[in-house]
Amino acid sequence: ANLFPLEAPAGHTAPTLDLVHRPRRTRRTDWARRLVRENTLTVDDLIWPIFIVDGEKTRVPVASMPGVERLSVDEAVKAAEQAAALKIPVLSLFPYTDPARRNEAATEALNPNNLVNTAMRAIKAAVPEIGLLADVALDPYTSHGHDGLIEDGVILNDETVDMLVRQSLAQAEAGADIIAPSDMMDGRIGAIRTALDANGFQDVSIMAYSAKYASAFYGPFRDAVGSTAALTGDKRTYQMDPGNGNEALKETELDVVEGADMVMVKPGMPYLDIVWRLKETFRLPTYAYQVSGEYAMIMAAVQNGWLDGEKAMMESLLCFKRAGADGILTYFAPRVAAKLAKG
Ligand code: PBG
Image 1 (cartoon, helix red, strand yellow):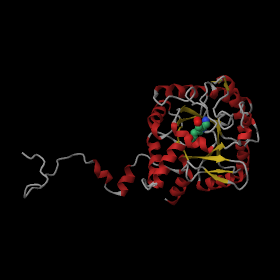
Image 2 (cartoon, helix red, strand yellow):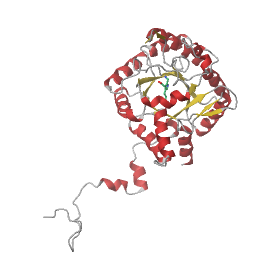
Image 3 (cartoon, rainbow, N blue to C red):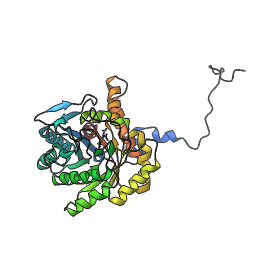
Image 4 (cartoon, rainbow, N blue to C red):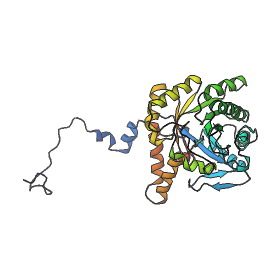
């Protein structure tokens, strides 16, 4: 017998199902969908990472991040003005350091007039109302591209923490509102908190990159800061194994105990389960970094005509909210903010 006839027998009508629950009722119309929507994306959720480069009136495109440019300090000030006009709460700054100023000891990280510190002073002078987040790690300054100091191929944890403390103090001095250690050394949050407090920076916050994974998705960022060519080996002795979830709770608990005000998960989209677990466990302000590779994937598909870029951008960011994130570091920030402002 033919159990699945393609054509219904003559005179057949589908029976009305006897359903109490028809979940589609609340999806029927735009007003109903808006009424039941559990999460929304607003401009207040955005942190905009920008790249700083030497020069004046200079904007250098980053090949693997279409639409993203490295900005000289004067152009970064313009970006900050744009961000403030759009009401983006925070900018995050990363330097492209001239290779001539990189060395084994990462001394440029401590230079009060390095690119990031100079840019922060200029932005604070021009746009005092915007928040500034300073990334703490040595990789933009080391000749080997690692986040820490190395001896005989081994990362020196405690010596690195001493450098990170001094880097943080220079950043606080230059006007950083949030210190964001991305290096994954043990004990750095406590050491930085103690030093900030001892130097009168009690009001400077710490956003810890608590659960930061050794990820392939940072590739375009390393191009942008010029550390790809330099990097020898990988970062698996300090960044976390992508197979681990419980370890993210341990790392985050330590950061919280050591004094982190806010915690972060990185990368973002492949790690939304970690965002959810951190938020459920610690109930602290929790952020996710939609990293360079995630941005590059979406943009590459858009350039091939395979994805609707605007829709993919908005959906990817809304999903961070649903996963429990209080905010997202994203290279889409100015485009999203402009779109949200238009309504
Ligand atoms: C530096 C740092 C990295 C990123 C943020 N801070 C790169 C890395 O750890 O290798 C990646 C950001 C991105 O990919 O967008 N420690």
